[in-house]
Image (cartoon, rainbow, N blue to C red):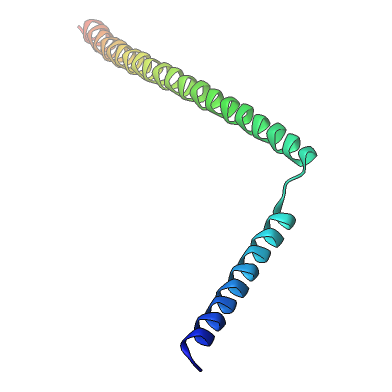
Length: 108
């Protein structure tokens, strides 16, 4: 095989490789092409997804606000309960002291 034949064979091999690559590219894009109806459906689904994400974010913010309000209300209620229990304890102690004083006065 001389130099000219080698160049011709190499050129043919490269051309065949190019033709196969181009055909594979065309074939892939032919089957992977998105129809215009499908594209509008994809746009509609993307819009719906965006709206759903916004709704989810709003729901999360609302739940966080409600949780903070409920936590604050719980702390206030616990503080009121502690104050009422302290007042009840003081009232019981005072009632005991008064009973003891009355019993002491009755015994004299």
